[in-house]
Image (cartoon, rainbow, N blue to C red):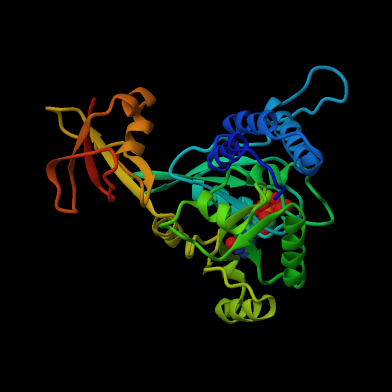
Length: 342
Ligand SMILES: Nc1nc2c(ncn2[C@@H]2O[C@H](COP(=O)(O)OP(=O)(O)OP(=O)(O)O)[C@@H](O)[C@H]2O)c(=O)[nH]1
Ligand SMILES: [Mg+2]
């Protein structure tokens, strides 16, 4: 990291690392560019920021007027639901087939590589919440997709879909990792449900644009691969990958029921039900937080004015709370009912 970065710039960078919404990320990048001390030592970083701004504004803009316009759907997907999980993998591994099965989308599935051309969002239900799954084009050196890494920036995690029956599977997956590494994206087997992802990034990478995505490996097409557990062990041995893994089949649905509960646990999702004084809680639509988040976070999800004027909350929940009054720093647990008082 270049020396002499001002506190103002560092604050802008910290805000960028936290931002998930693409438009907010763009605003934060502009703030980084505005506040970065302009001298030789920051030339590189300035160029990097400018490049990111250009890329992200183009991705958000959609088709441009006149000239060599890009046309087609948006290339970044605004996060919705409890978490955004990207489906990545080599061509033809069954990413889209899994997307269809898990979200009920109409993603295009075909028996040849490079079928998917654009990001396709879909919602995967789990209990009373949803995870947003993004189907993506294959990551492969034969067919690089320049915007793909941009689309990963909003993801909380990845599911790496492989077909262990494909003879070149190991090479393909190694090439995928190499392509991502060049773009400063690291897939990691560490799912720290209790830590704030932006703070892990800050500790481990000085580079504000380095992205680490917790990854779950899905060994797909279990229906047509004899002894898939043995194949998976061999694959792990050959690659050295330590990703947690499930053997699944998009065709038969085998193994798919395990994914939602696993993501719920390992992303540290906490569901909170709000209620108005004198009324029963709204049990239909929980707000979702991460483990370690507080009453203040729920208030912010309800409305920023509520967060601002919050005086106290009352909490009912498994952790022994039965309507007790708590402050904004109170940690919430899954299933808590919260009444906000402003
Ligand atoms: N037997 C079997 N075939 C599958 C399974 N999942 C996908 N397929 C088949 O594999 C082929 C590729 O599936 P897609 O879902 O299009 O693969 P993809 O990874 O999205 O491919 P690209 O978009 O080209 O990267 C299709 O012929 C699917 O029917 C599965 O679990 N079992
Ligand atoms: Mg596809």
